[in-house]
Each structure stands twice: as C-alpha cells, then as structure tokens.
Image 1 (cartoon, rainbow, N blue to C red):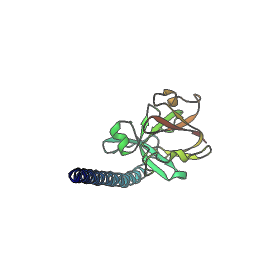
Image 2 (image 1 turned 45 degrees about the horizontal axis):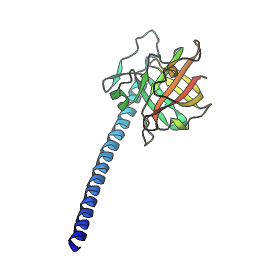
Image 3 (image 1 turned 180 degrees about the vertical axis):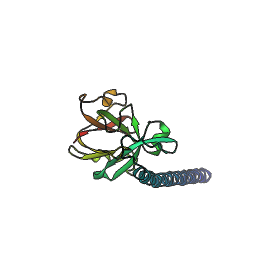
Image 4 (image 1 turned 180 degrees about the horizontal axis):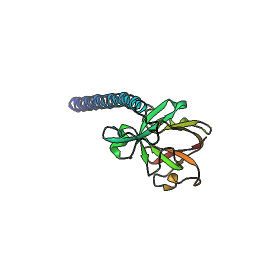
Length: 198
C-alpha cells in the first residue's frame, strides 16, 4: 500500500515537473515571438518614414522602387481609429504577411477597382489585429508613392469563408475601393472590412 502511494506521488511529481518545463518552454517561445514582433514594428516605422521621404510628387517621374525585407512597397495604409500605419507590400506570400500588410490580388493603389489588403490578426493588436473595431463611416487612408492620399469610408463588415473570392470584386466599375482581410476563429473564417472612396 505504501509503495503504491509513493508510486502515485512520484508520477504526480514527474507530471508536475513536465508541466512546469512545458510552461517555461511556452513562455520562452512567446517571449521570442513578442520580441520579433516588436523589432518588426520598429523596422516598419523606419520604412514608413523612408517612404514619406522618397515620395515622387511629380507624376511624370518614375515611382521609386522601395523595398522592405525583399518585398516591394507600393503604398502606406493608415487607419487612425485603431492606430494602424503600415507599408503595403506588393504580394501576399506567407513570408510577406509576417512582415507587413500585403496586397491580395491585382488591385492598384488609389485607382478605380478594389485594392484588397491582407494582414495577420495578432493578439497584441498589431497588423490587422484590431480591424474588428471598425464600423461604418470609419476612415482608411491609402498613400501612394506619388504622395497622393485617398480617404476611404467603411461601408460594410462581415465574416466569410476563406474560399470566398467575391471579396476581391468591386461593387461597381467606377469607384475606388479598399477591402481589408484577416483571419479569425483560429483561421477558419475571414473578417472582411470594405470601404469606398469618400
């Protein structure tokens, strides 16, 4: 009886030790990821500053080729209500989405059509982690590399399936639109925020 009781205590102690080790490991991994995100956020602030300093206001002059971490920057998205300002990368690869907001599809910055922007939904609120707080009437600004800023007004917000390609379509062929896309519900669904030129 005593041996059985001692055996249970040993197993309990081993399990407790394993749980403590796993918890410490998770804390370390979370800390590393947090530091990487903070470093990336600081780098993005520098990129935004660089973009603003290198805008070519003369539309006859070729747009400067600005890159961040190997990806071409095509503009800046700013959402004052939720304190967001990020460079827009030209393509939405898995790696690009780890670095900043990225264009999804072929939309053009501040031109007629639907510019779709994808971003991660990080718990700490970075990238598109707070776009769920946007409501109809809220503003999204897009700055192109010629210094043109267009303000868009949110008119719709909904959740859809990850395979719903209709989010990339324009509401009509004559308006400038922006669609924000992020994952929710453990990557099972997509939160969509649609805006059109003010």
